[in-house]
Image 1 (tube, one colour):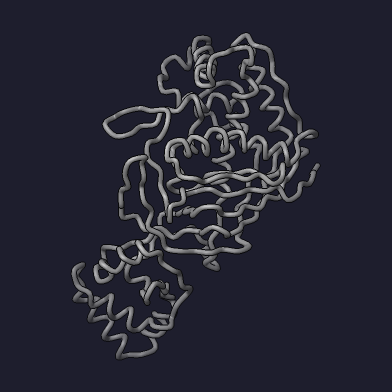
Image 2 (spheres, helix red, strand yellow):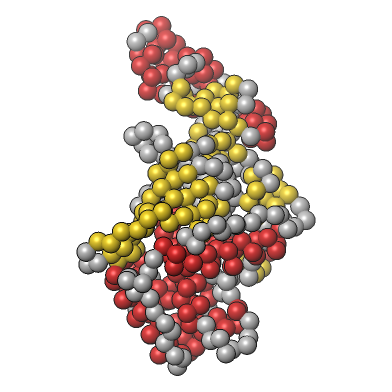
Amino acid sequence: MKSKTFNIKLKVLTPIHIGDGSSYDPTDYIIDKNEMHVIDHDRFIQKINSNKTLYDDFLEIIKNFTPESIGLIDFIREQSKGLYKYSLKLDEKALEYVAKSLNEISKAPIDKFIRNPFNDTIYIPGSSIKGALRSAIIEVIFRKLSNKEDKSNDSERRNKLLESLIERNSDLNKHNDKGKLLETLLTTTFKLNDAKNDILKHVLVSDFLPSEASLQICFPINKSSTKENNIPALLECAMPGSTFEGTITFKEQFFIELGKILDNIANTTKSGSPKKNSLQDFDGNLLAKWIRANYVDKVLNLEYKRTKTKFTFDKTKESDFILKIGKHAGALSKSIAGLREISVKENNILDSQTTFWYINNKPMGWVLGEVISSSHLN
């Protein structure tokens, strides 16, 4: 099967965090000034095993261990000096919070950035990029099906499209949540949760490996237009300037299935079939345009409108685009404009999130993408 692979470079614009559920606990690190040294526990154990006195002392501490005792922490820190895997800077707020909990074993966990278990290097999982692509592709479908003669606003046109689909398909009548209907636009048969028909199985995304990574322990702030909330949630973040490289491959079947979806929706809604792309006319500039259509128009601009915090995307090449990924990227980046049903406090459902996460006065999650090159495979 024919396919096209795009080589992509991602540059971190604002702090991002992508975790795997693991964290640094107080027995995993030593704080020195504004730096956190991560203990190499393998070397620590080797040291203890090679010294009977240390080994006996360690066993005694373990035997008398309680969650409130600091003996274990003190012992590990004392015997681990110089036995470090790597070191990380802490921002001012993170250092302030950690300093209060250094001697409490159940406190001050720091969420780790996902790392390669063999060499401890961070990376961006392909699944994070593929999830971002999903939103962009749904946006492409909506735009292709947009009735330019319809003078109603974007949100109303999209609602009309979904209502038309629901009216003509009994399988969808029982679903009231518009968000749950989005998957219907990515299957050829309009069946919910039908993985075998998901066109994204014809898009392969590699993990994105670091070419240059700057890391820091950060204390994120939850901000609305009127106030800030300090919620303890220490994160290991890739900082602005970090770069990652990976590939995105589109198989020819992707465009075949996308065409079927567009035709099916057009036939169901009695509208004309939109112009469709093929593998042959799909290049890096068009891929970047697809992604920009969602993340600039539908996410970045609305985020700015909500927060009034200046953060802009300056496109220098047609192959430039932006994505918002990772933890605290926000519901805007994971939902589709005109169909958003975002839950907020007091069971309110809105078409936009009301708060955003910031680190050092920058909204979390933005990366700049550039299509470096592409290649065909048969």
